Image (cartoon, rainbow, N blue to C red; front, top):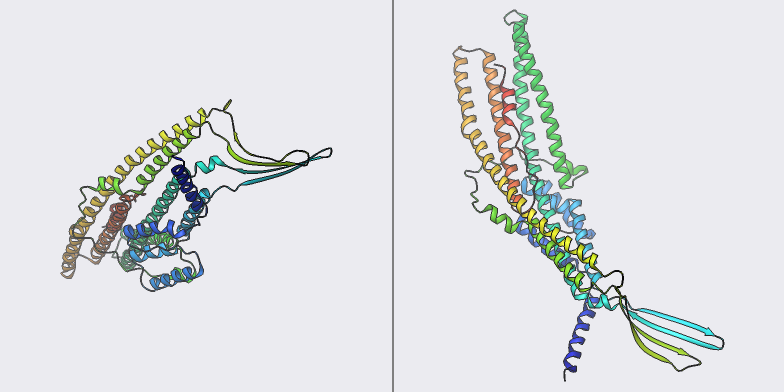
Length: 469
């Protein structure tokens, strides 16, 4: 009574397996979710350039962006379109998708043919063999491969987000480095003027040797600071160039003259830790890895005592005996290898994945707390420079100018004050740079693991530039 439904179920299963076996590699199906998530998180499109036309379209867009000064968003877009390392990550995603399709393909049947002679007797053997164990495990393998593709998608998306954050930070550092060079040169010009004036006054006997040597020492320090700033400018620009994948004439891009202004108020994120645990890609990937390991453990238990299961059809004929037909199943007997070692290994791998998932969650909470604290402190420091120190330096400069016009102070005091004012502005630039770097770190920490940028010590540099008088 139940033979018909059983036959229908078996037919449906075989039909599904046949369709899976005929499946083709669909790169868009694997890349589509990554592109959609990248657009959602980064706000910039990404492309997987697999042919000359797609490469030409990306090159045209990059050239259009390079025609203008490269802002933070433009740097991110160029990096996402032009970075070859990212394209290699997309190819890895395609490789994983191809391996998934290959794993779902039906195993090729095997055919054997034999011709044996015993005297006048000739015996012919024909066999058709199919890996039945692989056929029965195909649905489980399909689920495992789907999880593996999902993990590859998470890894590709994480690389997109990391590249976007690195490009944004590199653009900030490059602009700040160029601003620093300009202000360091202003300090050097003031030091050069002071040294020249000291030399002339010493020649006519109106300046002591010690005072002249002090001015020369300050000029030497200022020149050294310019050289260091120039080196940092080149390093920052080249790092941005590498992230954007530029070479040849493309490296002659321009940057904005100054960093964006400090926001009026910092972002208030009371649930940043909970939000990060929900959205962080590394936490999701660790969770998927644990789930996949658990599924692998289930498969290991199911196939513990079946190492080889092969179905074969026999068709033998002989000129001395009637034809033989039938079928056979070969099973490996678990006499020596009972599978307990493989099962113990699978359980250990699963527990290892559980511990790593918990570790990833703990680290994610800590990283996002640290990033948010760094962001708030960087805003406070930059605001203090902008609202307190820079205006104070400006007021002091105005007062000293009045005193100089009234002949109450000399030119050297005025030059020293000018150097101190320039150093104060340069310290604010460094504080503003640290804020935008902290902002990029916070954005990345809310989505995945990040390398937090240590804040630069701007106070010693400012003190060195303003010292001497």
